[in-house]
Image (cartoon, rainbow, N blue to C red):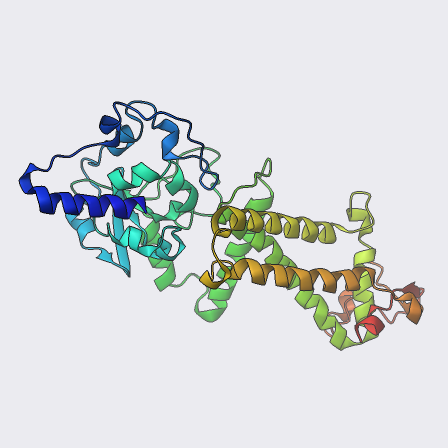
Length: 382
């Protein structure tokens, strides 16, 4: 590892030369720049070697100001957080809390812990492209180096900011984010107790779902874990719909087959396809989630062995995807002709509102409604 090599070399030089040791830089040693073609790293969208041939490339990045003036964290503040369970480092004047990122670091935990509570700017810039922190650990930035109280970092996404910026390009002030979050976590809203917690959870979840769907102008595939979270939200809604639907199997063939026919009656919402908008929504959500997950796995975890555990999420995801694909395919396209049609009386307005108290939502016993032959998915299920 280059970092360990530099650290070990510096320690040896100090031991052997003592006060005679002088600081050096790769740019100076190479006469102002290195020669030869160096290709970019495919894992991080670039490499520090890309600008090494230019005078002041990595050295200029390393020389970035580390003092944030008034406000911010002092180096003494950072030095207090120097353990595996509480690890802060300084990179290019920004203070990073990398405690939760230690296990995800491709170079291992020790490479970061070596600089716990210290300024790692020089070593970091030597082997990382400038965009690696916003790309892989945006939520680790907690502030800047300064002389006083901590100031919040500019929002770069991640867990420290909402899943979507609804400001339409306007800068948001996240200074009070932690204080407000603590107040929400420790206090209660207008609806108290567990009922209030449940209501606010559903409200917040649906709000994020709405803002995820409506204001998006296009789809951009990245390996950002936020994209994975958003697509998982889509699938979470599907799981709720599917789980509620499965409960109808316990209400008998009338309700379960009526439930299946309910979606058939919604084919007019499918934009001309033999499917309804819910099925299309589920398909797109699944494809989005799979594409984002595969891209993250390929970019971040593909070089790890199975024994490392880094591929566990990918393996379990593929297993679950296989099961759900088979299950939904049987539900949607299973052969029910062998049982013949099952006749139900569908409610005129899709839902049997008079049957809500008895949970008879998708069929009616009103004899004025003519029976309709539908797929017998109840018999297929059993």
